[in-house]
Amino acid sequence: KALEEIQKESSEIEANLSTVDQLDFSKIAKIELSTDSLVVGAGKRADITIKLKDKKGELVNDEFAKLALSLEGEASFSADTSNQITLLTGTKKIGIVMQSPIKLKVALENSDKTSELLLTAVADAKIVLDSTVKSVLADGKKQVSIDVSIVDGDGKLIEAANSTITLALSDPLMGTLDKSELKLVNGKGSFTFTVGKKKGDLIINAVSPAFDSGFLAVKLLPGEPKKIILTSDKMHLRATFYDDFGNAVDTNSGTEIKFGITEKTKAYGFLSSLAEKTLNGSAEVDLLPTLKTGDVQITAESPGLKSGSIKIKLTKKLGASEITDMKLDALVGAFLGIPAGNVTESNYLGGSILAGGRMQAAA
Image 1 (cartoon, rainbow, N blue to C red):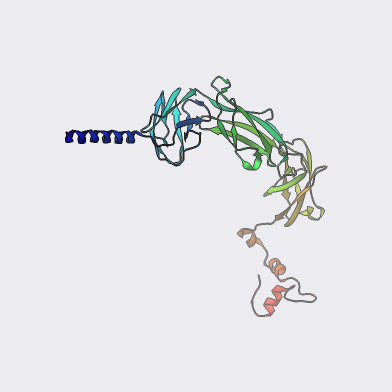
Image 2 (tube, rainbow, N blue to C red):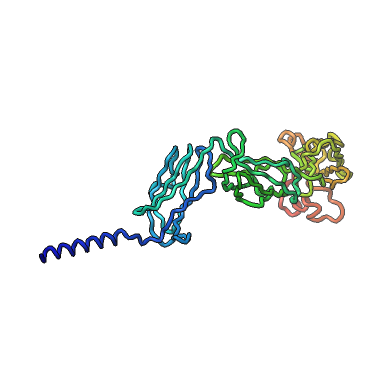
């Protein structure tokens, strides 16, 4: 009888211990799954955020929790995600690459708490950027409004595609965006581009891991010509129009530019033409030198513009045969000079060298 009592007590203790083991001391009341967009492009990545919440809806960030993930449909977890994950702070972002509509299921280990999320994949879904302005003056002031939308392969708006889009310029020196990220609502959104002061072809890019990227080409145009800059490639001269911001005005053609050589240097050469009309903002002539050597100053002018000028040094290269053909007394005369007047080393170098005994002959 005593033995029966002992066995009975032991059974009761075991039952109580089993009940204690089954008690759930966790504060986690639910698993919350969220994503920017319930629709993604086929073959693209969907980012899902997992959060563990308590009964009050507050994040449970002080528990160690293990979760099991599973997928139904044609999809796979991204390289940075596995089907078994651990949460230490109550939240984690995972990635799924989808080929078709799928169901994601997340279950808390040693618990009956689960959560599910349905996602849709659309073939050829892409970002589209559009604006009524495709070219604009690069004055550092003008603003351009640009619309963004997500469309399918037939160009139809996907209203459920409420993704976050990242925006960027191909050349940050050509302007600024009022935002670097854009959250779409009902598959649409807009942002503003402020032009810079640098002309050229600009690409505005829009990217998202969930859809094919989109872009918009905008041409930034130079302002009105304000000055002429004259450059040279050996004897070939080019006069180019520039605006106030240092942009070559390549939009100008048919404007006459007058070329000339200053009065003091005109003996050194002449020009192939004294007037030429611009083509894409520039006009060109050639300098034809005479046999004289020295600095020649060329100018380029057009009404209402600041003129340009350039100095070119003209020299003559002597070969061995030319030096051989020279008469010795002419070379000596040029070197020694004429000993007349107040003769010093500065105005009669050859003579001072000979007189000083530092050279036996000069040639």
